Structure formats: C-alpha cells, structure tokens
Image (cartoon, rainbow, N blue to C red; front, side, top):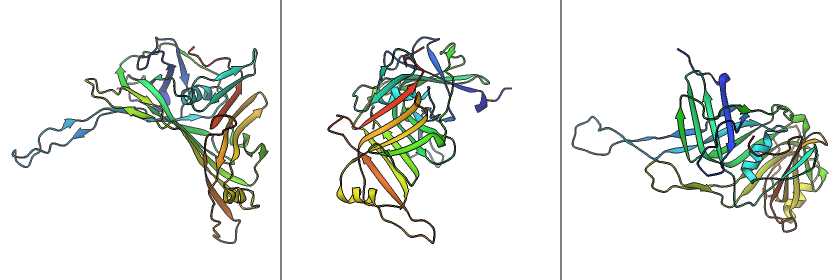
Length: 317
C-alpha cells in the first residue's frame, strides 16, 4: 500500500477566467513550493441537547473553510505569478528579453486561481477553486534561503483520484540568494540593516452567504496594508530623526543578480514610529522600527513591485 510523501507532491496553478471555475487541462503552471496548508476543513459541533444520558448525541457538521498558507521561493520567474495574484495583471514593457513587469497596488479587481495539490501515491488530487491571494510576507537577512509565505483564501475544494490539470508547464527555477538583497531609503542604500520583515496584505473580506454547497460567494479586497519592520544597528540618527519629525520616506526592498534579473518592492510613503534604544549588554545597540506604508500622493499609489526577467507574459500557458 502506497503512502503519501511530500517529496512526490506537486502543485498546479492556473488563473481562472470565471471565478470558481477551474480552467481546462493542459493550461496550468507547475509551481515550486516548500510547504502548503492550502485545503478545506469542516469542523464538527458538539451536540448541546439533554435528556439522553451521559453519552453525547452525534455531532453536527459546521461550515466549510477553504484557505491556507503556501511557502514559495522568491525567484526570478515564478514569483511573477504570485505577484499577479496579489496585485493584478502587470504592465509589461520590452519587445525582447529582458522584460520589465510592473505591478501596482490599489487595484479593486484581483484575479482568481485554481490550485491543485496532487499526491500521486494515494492517489489524491485536491483542486482548490476560486483562490484569491490575501497576503505575502518574507524576511530579509544576511544568510539563509529566501522564501515567502503567501496566504490564500479559496472558494472551495474538489477532490478526486486523478489530476484535472493535465500536462503542466514549468519554468526554469532561479532563486535569489539572501546576499542578493538590499534595502534603500529615498534611492540610497540604507546601512546597518541587520534584518527586515515585509508584509503586504489585501485584507480580503469573505462573502459568506448561505449556500447548499458550503462554498463562499467570493473574497473581495478591502483597504490594503503594507507593513513591516527593520532591525538597525544604531550608528546614526537618520531614521530616528525621521520618526520624530513624522515625515515619510521611500523604502525599497530588492534582490538583484544583475540589471536584467531583478526584483524590487518599493513602498513610496513609509512612516516610522519613534523606537526605543535598549541597552542589553556590552555589544552593539540595535533599534527596531515597525514601519507602515501609506498612499503616496505623487505616484498615486502605496507600492510598486517590479520584476525584470526573460518571461514575456504571465498569462496561462
């Protein structure tokens, strides 16, 4: 009897043209991922009824919830698929490689996806339909693997013993390394950064109407948020002065292999709180700034994500 193993699992993803309706077979990307909790669950409600002795009556099934987190690499090509899910379709420039894909925050319409998690050993294939990307978060540091966590809210899950995705289309995987990372403030490299955390959220609102199939009607984007923190060795008062003054700055978080292979998330108007400077021993002093981004009146948006690579389009294969 075969037992399911994560090493043999696969993830297929395609953008839906109709919310909640998976595309036809052979139009899916084969996606790299480190872990996934995406799927549906249906809890049981304990019976509250009395009069039948000490042994409880059978439980009642509650509403179905379909969502989860997917851990994905921050890479040169596949990242664009997740950015499209988070921000909407990009504006792509360039007639030949390299192509520049620019994703802008603020869109009221986000594409939905069909994501199938397959385990061929059992076999078990779970097609999550109506998937909308809720948030992405990752940590920047000096070393280690560069991965992001994408939170997804799905309409529902359809399971079967065979894949509905057909033949998958892959891309060449080229990951960014931690040493490729940089943090800039107003266009200049920001020194003494020990680590940083970035979270972009669409703050999706589940439309939980009464339905016989247990699925939701949709997940609508609300007011977005771009927040995070930077842990800084205290060497100057630039950030502290800005926090006290209450003025915004532009923060850029980037990974670059070369000019033709680059990813950058730019927060156009970032506000810093005044941070305390704890002394925790004879070593260096570090300060943590929990920053928040807001609408920038000059650019007309909060954030811009730019991915430069050799991928011409992010339409379904």
